[in-house]
Image (cartoon, rainbow, N blue to C red; front, side):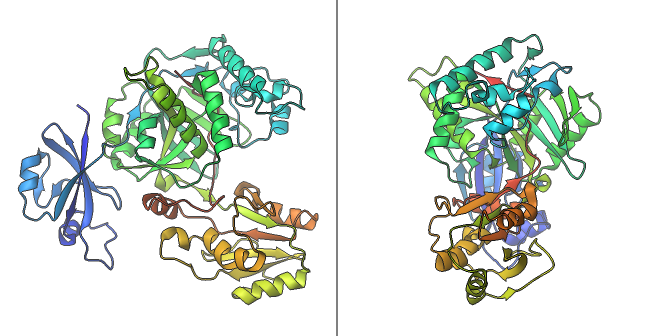
Length: 487
């Protein structure tokens, strides 16, 4: 039976006894607690603020009946909320272990067409030929031309039928670990529902561009497959952590190989039911990387809906790797500005006029939230950002304070997403790339940001807001070509 999810509000003194680790400061308001009902039995609950598992609600031992729980006079309110997000096993198409290192590659949006062409040169099995099919066409061709999608579909068919790939016999989930040496992330690889995305169970934090969504949807539809997973995150769970340990310490991996950036290890979960039950306790999933692919998957699923259902049920799911929040690593997304038509001294004076500026500091990375490092005329300066101009979490983000308090009043930057004077440099390249661009004359001013915290991303998503463009750079990136979902 599918779980049904409810939410109630408990007085905070009860929550203090049930889950003392909860952050309950400065508020006497009832704390939302969500619980899952299977049939007539409530099996577990958790406080949304930290997902701490509890065995008691208002002094009632779990599992108990719904009627028993409702009868407790300690409840302030109870309301039904939609079911938890669905974790769906799938029959993946994957390389043979002997071929996986030759096949797998960086995601499509991490390498340019020129870079992909160079990487795939001499590598006939490279999955870049599926996710960047324009590399097999003349360089002058438009990457959005019909021929590109046709070539991608042809290359996907070739991948599925190749002697070095197999399709799983049974629908499965997987555990995937990526280890760069400096850090390691371990997540659950499965499919999630496009309907859950539509219903707000998979929360977004970033605006999407229609042209890019259209491009991704055309590739998905032409290939009848989701070639690459999205990256999702969730509030941690002791139960899921224990399941992960049970696999990674006892089961031989299906894949274990290295590329130039990381070591990749994959374990197959042969009995996914316990994992699905564990994810029943996860109230929300959050998009970390892959907003355009999520929306494109939703559009494709919608096209396959009919009054009588669909003859392609797998079209309503798309692949994702789900990582716990505490393992996520966000790097800064830095910026440069060009076309400012001011002298270096004038720029420095303007910056100093809007907030506290410490000149000629010996560092290029801001030491704390609320500060940026600005590179002008061969030197780095520390700028304290002006106060937030609104009460919401999104207003307090450094990227928002930078735009609202510095870029808009000083340089008339009203829409950072569309302003051609701003260029963005992914955090993996560091402030050195910012400095190099300014020194080479490609920009007038460079800005090194403090990384956004994962808690800020989650808070903005929970509020239903969208973060300013290029607020996050997640590292390490997922690898492509390891598991493909077809429909």
